Image 1 (tube, rainbow, N blue to C red):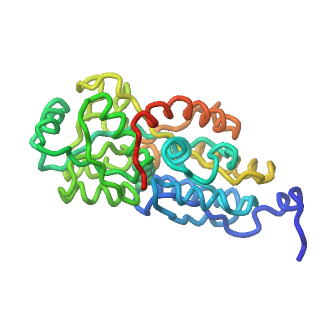
Image 2: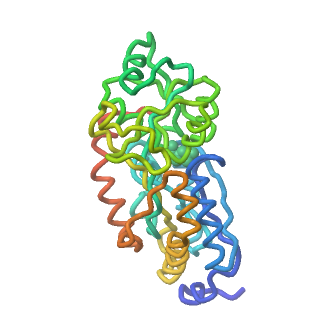
Image 3: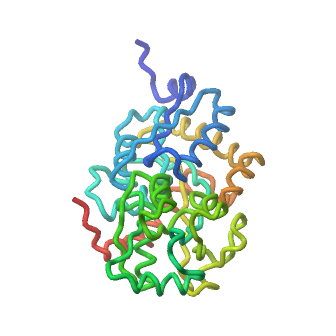
Length: 312
Ligand code: MLT
């Protein structure tokens, strides 16, 4: 068996398919973004990028799987503000989100959108807030588990609205959305890319997007500033990481393939059509994602820790 050194490994990389671990269920927004990018990255890398959905515990199970994989570039961790920032403030992870991972590239971000089941008799965000406040029990909010982006968005929503929510965790917001359409839960503070097609189809109601400007693919949905929750701004950014110890040359190859995908007009159209916003062009180095993740930890951990989230 030829033992590869870092340089040798990098030279022949990739020599077989690469796995991207998506820590949420198929059919959700993370899965959708990973599949679009993986498909285009295959063209640059010359090897298939297989998507493996490893779910549970707000995405921390899947990230843990990636952290413990060989640092050889054949296992890539897809994640975001929830999995690679918030989870560190909620779970005893058994790994360190900064020390045990190497950043590869910042990916597109998603404003959140406040959506409800159709049965809610509200025609505006103000009417929705009044309806939620009038519930005899805390209204139910679907999430992808404690620490997921939809859960962090829910905590933020509670803080700005003063409305207590009863969280209903799923293995991703794909299944959560199915239950919202079926009227099983009251709301989701969801990624726009996930909910927008159901909003367009009239299967759920949208009230506001958590951005200072209206979202390209949901121009008729007001911003939180217009609708009555001023300053409730949150965009869920995503990224790719690999285990600590992965050779720099391999990280560079993965980064180059991801940047080529992000610069591809066809990929941009696909992602923007989902309401996703491309990352700034000067933020596409591995170092930029590393600095961004550290800044987001400093920004979000105080609120999340103050929420005192109980996870068994
Ligand atoms: C979340 O954090 O809510 C997840 O991204 C949902 C998903 O991708 O399924």
